[in-house]
Length: 187
Image (cartoon, rainbow, N blue to C red):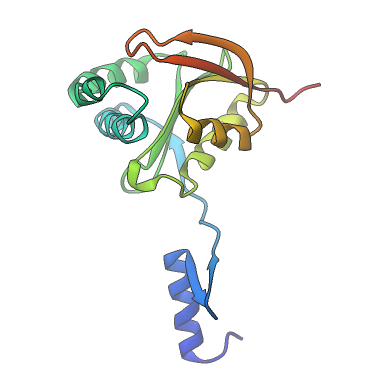
């Protein structure tokens, strides 16, 4: 038994808020599993909106401000319409009511092409849910590219088993150097 009604209310609050302050300490409650599903053509607009918002928040100071400001939801929407029709691309989305993030990957090349999370959901486990779902589907070695200077992304991917493999290229649209990271699952 949990005890008094006040204790029950305290536990319910903790479940809802993901944390509880107790005796001067903040205790983190692990997030509930976030539903992850395949994207559908009906998700194209929401994917575009999330993609633009995440670029603007995540790449500030990495990509030129004018390039971030020029991001267009309508242009991204058209791109997502095409990508969702591409049989070579797999796109998974996280969230029940609103999209909280997405991961896009090519099963044949084993490359994660994009992983973006809504800015108000940064550092809440959404990216982890998505990358683990992609790893489950890819079931093996994978690669991805990260903008140089994106220390948060490098740290995130390192926590998930990725290391820099020495390859780099210049991102055509932004002129920013991209660094390849790989995850080896076989010996």
